[in-house]
Amino acid sequence: MNEPKPSLPHAITLRDRAQLQISGVCEVISFDDASVVLRTTRGAMTVEGENLHVSTLDIDRGEVILDGTVNGIYYTGDGSEKSGFFARLFG
Image (spheres, rainbow, N blue to C red):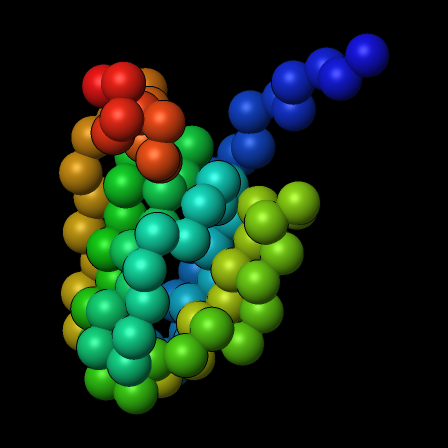
């Protein structure tokens, strides 16, 4: 039987505005060199900056590491909302 994964703890660590380590990531929604949008266990998260790139992506462990210049980190929602294709389709 497939059992649901336990809720991943969410944490962020920013080093010198140049590297951002994020845990508790459920999904990468979009990314380019100016912004990265993620769904975390604590809500949707947008990281804005310059020359951003994803250096590590491990969705099974819920971890993402971004490199580049981080200018802002924003959250929307509390993590309880459903997102993704089916949520938008049947929302």
